[in-house]
Image 1 (spheres, rainbow, N blue to C red):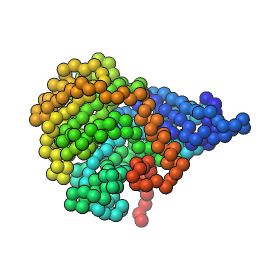
Image 2 (image 1 turned 90 degrees about the vertical axis):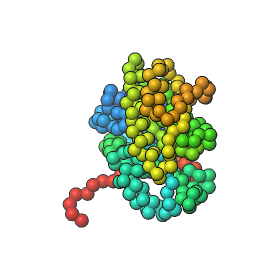
Image 3 (image 1 turned 60 degrees about the vertical axis):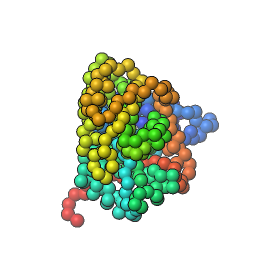
Image 4 (image 1 turned 45 degrees about the vertical axis):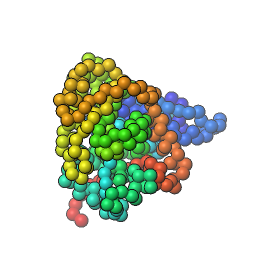
Amino acid sequence: MTGWGRFPALGMQIGEAAVRIVRLKRGTGPEGPLPPAWAEVPLPPGAVGEERIVRPRDLYEALRDWRTSAGIIGGRVVIGLPPGHVISRMVAVPRLSRRELQAYLETEQAMGRLIPLSDPLFWLDPYDPDDGRQGEDGRRRMVVTAVEQRTVQAVHDVLTALGFFVRRIAPPGPGVGALLCRMGSTLDDAAALWRQPDAGEGEALDVFLFSRGVPVFYRRMLIGGGADADAALLPLVERLERFYRTTLLDPATRVEGFREIWYFDRTPVGETWVSALSAAFPEAKVVPLAEQLPELPPGAWWAWAIGAATERCRNRRTSERQRPTWRIRVKRKRGGDR
């Protein structure tokens, strides 16, 4: 692979099957502007799991071999984690300072009422059109996005060892999420499930939960393809039910029960799927929708993430109305007594 330069600015999307890499800035070489460059680095099976980085060494070796063949010494990197590693949900928070808000979220997390992760990193994004300053009882509606600390630490350590400077983690693009969130104004205590093929990684199940027309939770779950795909859906339904029973029934979320479950499917599926949903949520009506929503081409999410990261690099002074890219905040343990 040629035309990368020695210290390029790169965007990397880490997936279960491969790492997709593009150059964010074209740059100029001895013969003029460099052509666009992109690559797909395959990963050994099992290196990246559904919810975490299982074998960081395999990720390191795959990227090291690619870096050597591309003639790259180092550079800046914007990272996109697999969507399955990220959890987003809507919360109503008091009007506090940034530091006080962080402490408030840590307290809510310690009580098990926020994100079902053991050691998460949080990023905040105002939801309301007026930057979230309005709400019931003076509270602000914020989108809290979280990822496991060990996942960010593993990716950070791998790329740092390769000589790269990890600049940011780019947020997931809107895609299906924005489409369903726009439909959220018509949803009241409902769930929307979107099942579609995921290029090179089997099938994906996107789960969106709505409360009073507001999306309160999002999670992507990868499913192995083939004949066992329907059987693999049963544990996913159980996980969704467990999260609903333990978290969304909390009085702070004001979700008292699902009225309907809207079901979108891009793959052939049997009655097992609908039966499992009906059994897990007997109070809800499972509605397999026949409407054909717009198709999303493979890579639409990453194309948006790269565009957002590139625009952010061009103009760092952006308003809060624009969705920010995530800044990495890695907490390191210090040895010895203070």
